[in-house]
Length: 98
Image (tube, rainbow, N blue to C red; front, side, top):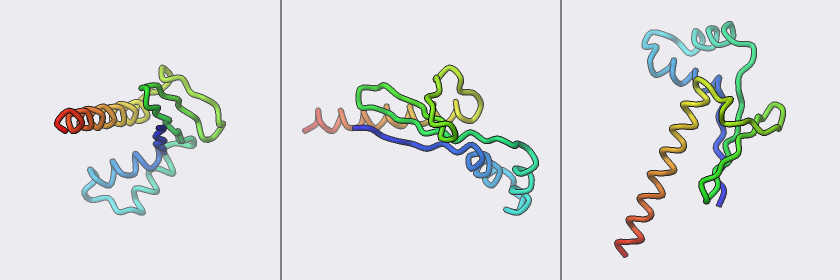
């Protein structure tokens, strides 16, 4: 089984700002994001059942090494990996209980 998870950096920061920027309107958030970065990462993480993973840059369609991730992309990867480990452990407990 392969699980594909897409990470769009601009959307990530938009959500963070919406959650934490109590007084910011959506238009203000958009304006800040438009002015702050000309290039946003757009990655697809392909997680495989055996624990391996491939990261694809959706702009270039090339593989990205895990070591080159930084900032929000690295945090996103860590969160996804933790979710997958928890799910695997839950499934193991359910299987063992049966």
